[in-house]
Amino acid sequence: MALEKKPRVMSGMRPTGGLHLGHLVGVLTQWRDYCESAEAYFEIADLHAYTTGFENPQAIRDARNEMVAVWLAAGVDPEKATIFLQSAVPEISELHVLLSMVTPVSWLERVPTYKGQIEALGAEIATYGFLGYPLLQLCDIAVVRGERVPVGRDQVAHLEFAREVVRRFNHLYGEGDDVLVEPQPTLSEFPEVPGTDGRKMSKSYDNAILIADDEATTTQRIRTMFTDPQKLRKGDPGRPEICPVFALWKLVPQAALERIAAECRSGALGCVADKAAFAEALNAYLAPVRERYRLFRSDPGEVERIIAEGTARTRMVAGEVLADVKRAMKLL
Ligand code: TRP
Image 1: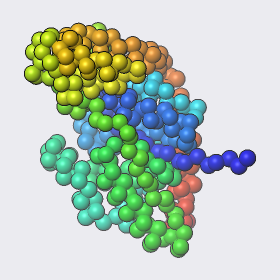
Image 2 (image 1 turned 90 degrees about the vertical axis):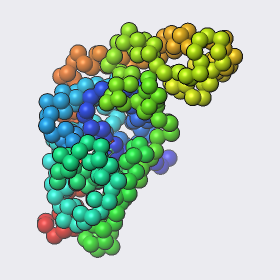
Image 3 (image 1 turned 30 degrees about the vertical axis):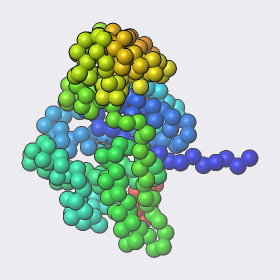
Image 4 (image 1 turned 30 degrees about the horizontal axis):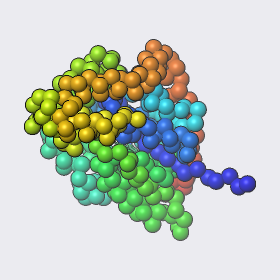
């Protein structure tokens, strides 16, 4: 029987700390599954974190192991996938300089996150490095020959830009062959996870349920959640379709969604009781993840060993890709 070649999957996350339920169900369960179905590379994008967080390097450093502990707790298997540290793969930075020679500044300025983030965070972040953010992202992917890139919708424009640069590079230097692969985004099927106030769950909105939180904190957070504003007391009919608590219930495997929705609509179920039941169900669902998280947090040496091993493996592939690129550019 012929062995089917697994696709090369690559993705990354900036180490900014505070991974939450949204990361777990929206991203990390997918990453866990890719450990089986793909040849997967997952990157700690610490250089990318400096594009907006350069004033606080210690926070980036502290977030590194914490973030990887959550990945591992979520089931990302370091025996099957390769976890690596961006800044420790110098081939990425070298590739960035080389590809910058053929990347028009206008293409970078046109990427919507560029102007959007400057509007949101202020002109101080408009550094040369920040402008190059999507190019650096392409280098992360290209250096391991990533074909599929699981990302959120907000990253699709970066991948479009990346494919344009790859096409230009291959056209200029490929001599009929593709030196670099055009990476394709794979969108997660999960809808946006709402936070406790109904907006998108995000640590910066202070509305998140963190993996690192304990059960009491989670229960307290859920107690303060927004619900249907027209349902003031038990007995009032509620609208589960607009209730953030109900949206989060959908993330809990085997939750009795139909019964909860019916009892909310009829008024038989009040918000206080619903939140208490939800807090219990969510804490039970998160318990094994949190337990593994605590184990990895208590063993930073093990996390660092996993990162170092994955980084060494990545550098072997990266060296070959970089050599191909340099050969194509007549530098070797
Ligand atoms: N830009 C991505 C984000 O903010 C993080 C990232 C960095 C990434 N390098 C990557 C994602 C390479 C996919 C592939 O979510």
